[in-house]
Image (cartoon, rainbow, N blue to C red):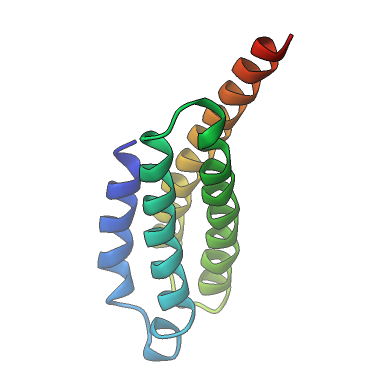
Length: 114
């Protein structure tokens, strides 16, 4: 999941350009959430089977929160169209990967229990 690194590097470039009134509020919140997603995904990657699920679900929740905060930055004109689209595409890709990972683990565990 190298996308998480790519997303953060893209975000960092845009974060520095945010207006001050949002850089230290919404921007800082997104920055923290991205760090927490990276940490959750990394933790999950070292665990086995169902032990991964809490970390994957945490990363999914935080990914959904970022989508809302990015939309707020866009609607307040702190992010232009291109930046919003670039970030949204990457966060959506991570969301799809996490959803697939979550579904795969649930499917594997349900077949083991039978």
